[in-house]
Image (cartoon, rainbow, N blue to C red; front, side, top):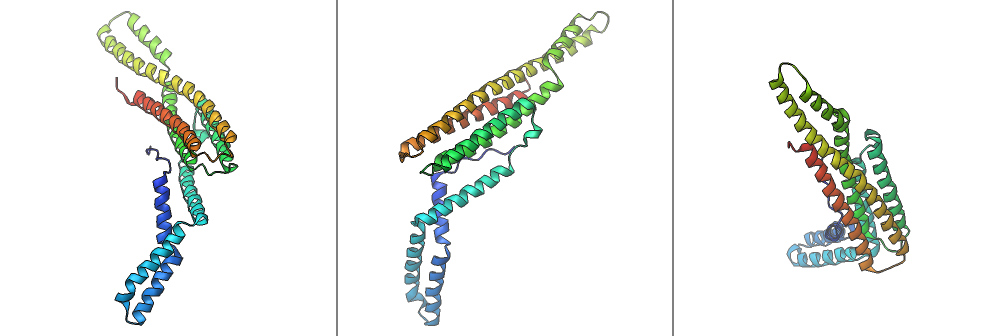
Length: 260
């Protein structure tokens, strides 16, 4: 599974604005017009600095245009959202308890986006963190599904009962059964570790969903605020949840992959 992307940062947004300004048709056409005039008048070298200055002024005008900046932001957000949608987990492929948690996270994501869309400020950082959170959330659901399927195929209680039965079994072949008991004991240790991680996943995700409700409530109460620090604090809240889920996902992966 691909590593989740970082949330869309201010530096990435600034680079997108700069790229859009440098490639804007208005600036490029002015540059071309001055250069063509220089060619026709056989004054390319004298007019080259003029062409560059005109081009720079036109690009700067585009860069600092608020309407253009809004369009660029919406375009970049849309592109990242499309990428996220293509990578989303199909809930129908998940076990019921995991599916319910994923659907719960998506519902809260939708409510947070609605709160942001109704706010007077763009909340760019919060939006980026919500995108990144959902990607990590769905990656963790994939790891949880692996644990769920393994535990369903090899229930720890059954493995433990079988191990105990082999230990008590009378008759010849005790040496070979000892090796079997040892293998079953090793399997049971791994399965119990998976069981603990999956239970932790359920509990932690329930808490995270409550925390997302709190973020949404904070957005609603601060929807008319122009306090940049408040917006950054909300983004940090979502970032903290994302990092917690990421750590949880890594723990599940280690429980599944660790040989001991």
